[in-house]
Image 1 (cartoon, rainbow, N blue to C red):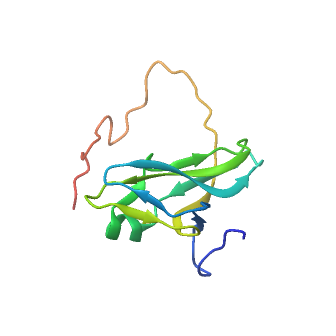
Image 2 (tube, rainbow, N blue to C red; image 1 turned 45 degrees about the vertical axis):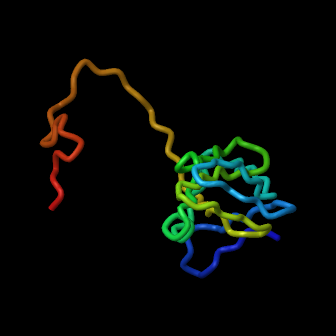
Length: 134
């Protein structure tokens, strides 16, 4: 069936494994799993992200092989999920298992301008922990 939001407050739609047989994902193995869902967003002001499901990662060590998937608005085709078993134990994915979630996000395409120098800001070039942790 069509993907669904689990609750009224859900940001992500569950993506399910569209496989015929159970798939064993060995420890440290990465597999590409079809979802059976093809999309074409078409709106240049939108994109979709494929994100891990927190329970799979925390409880079973199954995360996305590419960490985050980005689906451009002009992509047309089936969605696949790269799953990486980072645990020491094998994990079995069954047909219909919820393996990831998809969140639609607005897109703003930046316009760039070449400049000789920047006006100084308070932060300047400070990065990578410059603002502290507290």
